[in-house]
Figure 1 (tube, one colour):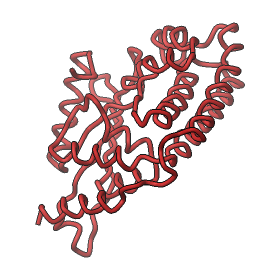
Figure 2 (tube, one colour; figure 1 turned 90 degrees about the horizontal axis):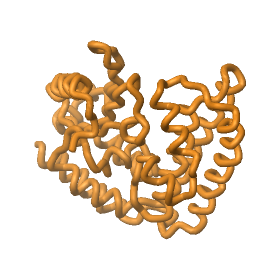
Figure 3 (cartoon, rainbow, N blue to C red; figure 1 turned 180 degrees about the vertical axis):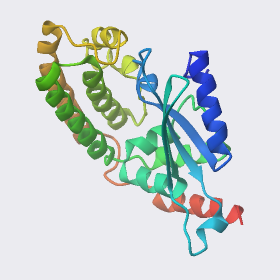
Length: 261
């Protein structure tokens, strides 16, 4: 099932990916952002996050291709935020515990898929480690600071609160279970974050809808509990401290390069 339900948005996304696919070979294209996190609103943009595989021949010469392609524009009223990172960048990110790359590889309903992804997904799961805590906690903390600064200037918003909760709970779930679940609405009940449905309802009315005072008051203690749960998950995690199968992942990467010669 496609994660984009609006026909116009889907048509624009497909057009952009067709264009970008002519310039690079996508290993996967993952729809990130509010659509993946379970709380899109009518004015949400499309965050198209990809991994591509550069031609091996292009990596052997003097002029190395740019490993990252960014595209940000509005097309027929749809805001597109496309980023693609080359496979080596993605693999290094996976080993560092970079949730951005892990979520792309382990996407359950990618917009574009390839024959490379199943093997990389298996190796990614085998190399998950407690390093993911650093990524998710750091990202959630920076989002919390941005939320608090915005709240001081304009009042608290549901959108910023949801992004903090989403990041922290995805990290917690990954540390506890080894499973990558970016959808906050699927996680909130299991982790007792009952404030989420009300926040989603407000956010779906518009990206910048302010929070009612009672909800804004309840938000701080909820976020404190979520951060504490994330830290506890790191200490009790069944994941190893370091990736356990780095050699296998590197062997696979070299095999991909050799097969393209």
